[in-house]
Length: 362
Image 1: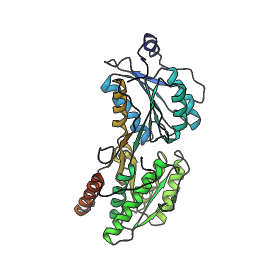
Image 2: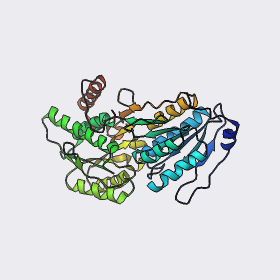
Image 3: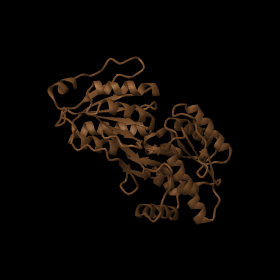
């Protein structure tokens, strides 16, 4: 149940506002609407600095809001953050616009979301990729056990490598990044154990929790240079976990292939073959989080007065995370490898195989 009714005449009037006068450092919420049964309901979203065209988790989350607009007939507002300094301003704009539920995208918005929730206890929020140590009654975490799907990607990467070296790197050393890297490392280790191989992993030492990071999720040139270094060191399958910085990795892989190398890329968050088509020719697979579905489901529940702050946790079992198809590389992946990956997936779902990460949802 909602804490109080927000479907008052005043609220309905306020929903007609199409933009707010915000300070120059923040974006005014952009509004669109489609008449429907939920025309008096407004779902909103605030991106992190990667923006809604990051070909990653901001874009996927935004797609979920747009699908909710189409399927549920709600009004929507969006605010794109250009830097971390915009988070609070953009959230304040959403509160002034009387949003029913505001989705914030990413771990970096955790503090700003908690602050907005405390100041607006009658408003509802959902945050992607963050879980608070102490639950907040009007904030629903949308989190993912991506280590499970990344484990399968690590196994596939090791199996596909022709040089015997694979690599991964992150944008920042935060839990929602290292959980991918942990799973990937364990998947490579599993392949080595099962096959008696010694495929090397560059960029991440799970035991020491030490590895390679670009330092942000914005500067693609850093991702390109890191990837070039990995390629020079012999890596022929590379998984960036760095949002838009991954585009730099894609550019480096493309350059290497033009030079005669056979380097492959593994995308994260969305199916990169579809969302990052510039690099689809090199896309082995992707570690997918179905953020669009989760965002739409959370908005739908809230529009039906069924909001609760219990975390949504995406797993292989509920298809919240997945290994994407091999697409153009499908014929190069042996049937035995495909069967082994499916068997590992079944073992993870059954609980017979535990994929451990310090960053896994609790």
